[in-house]
Amino acid sequence: MTTGRFITFEGIDGAGKTTHLEPLAGAIRARGAEVVVTREPGGTPLGERLRDLVLHEPMEGTTEALLMFAARREHLVRVIEPALARGAWVLSDRFSDATFAYQCGGRGLDRGVFRALASLVHPHRNPDATFLFDLEPGLALERQRAQSRDPDRFEREAAEFFRKVRDAYLERAREEPARVHVIDASGGLAEVRDRLVREFERTFP
Ligand code: Z5A
Image (cartoon, rainbow, N blue to C red; front, side, top):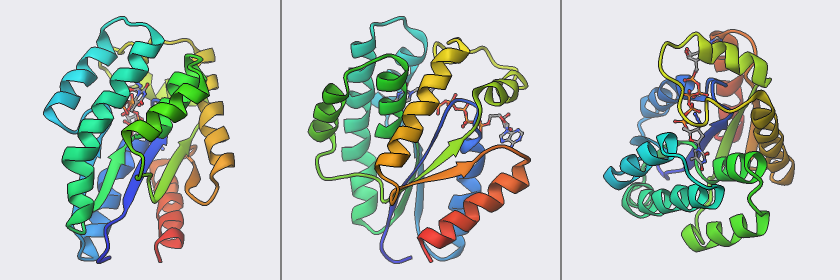
């Protein structure tokens, strides 16, 4: 626990990743490590302003990808790298896999453009581990409907969009099986938490 690690949580909207982030952070803190919990888009004052724009302002797909990466660069330089440099663990609710899934998978952004932007924005940094909360889009939608907030631009997308996003996430997991750990996010909260904890302990014994 003395060397910080960069861990990301991913999944389609409503898969449950945010619910499990703080409890895992608490478990790592209990082992004596400093933990920084953060999110994308966001994590910095500029990133949070960009978040507000991408979630609510209509825009073209490449513009959306560029703003995600702009927010990510600030996040990396101001939050993620300094925390890792002092030995903290960083738990981020989304990172570049989300751009691959939503902008390439969902919106059709060219994968070559994605790779070029990723190597410009974080050339020497990738998550040490990614926990991908995988859920059938219909179930994720039911969970989201139970929340009483106004849907954002992404949440208003059709089921077909989320099927493509999910497929792109699973493609990422097949490409990088040592890094991307797929967590079955169906079932009750305790069941999903147990799967996450088991996978975390297997990855970081
Ligand atoms: N986005 C993008 O397009 N490209 C990028 O590069 C990045 C992001 C970084 C905001 O992300 C949007 O940005 C996102 C993709 C896009 N799309 N949207 N919308 P976000 O992560 O901030 O927003 P989100 O995905 O909508 O997060 P979320 O709604 O918080 O979803 P979640 O984290 O997967 O779920 P949750 O909040 O933990 O749980 C949802 C509800 O289900 C909640 O009421 C829980 O109590 C409930 N829940 C959770 N687990 C269970 C179980 N097991 N059973 C029953 N109910 C459960």
